[in-house]
Length: 116
Image (cartoon, rainbow, N blue to C red; front, side, top):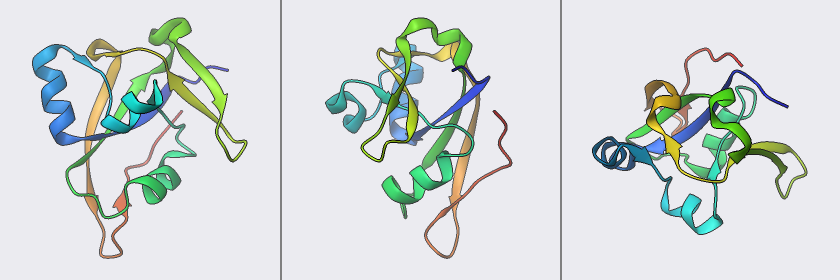
């Protein structure tokens, strides 16, 4: 299963550090889990609400899934839903777009229109 774009929720400080290093190694949570958590366009808003609600300075990374090769694995989460996980660092060259996510008055992030 490969979609053109997959999405990652990234803290601004982590992204700025990645820009200096030339590679993104994920959040502390990603590193603890041993992979970078991604979502499809259909999954990312729910993921943000569940894991990052109310968190300011959050960025949405749109990533070219095909460029990640066999390190991108589609795996079942505890809910049974299939999510893309990257087992390795994310090369910055795979990032298609970086979008700042503003918080709405309900504490949830406001997303642009996304495509797979």
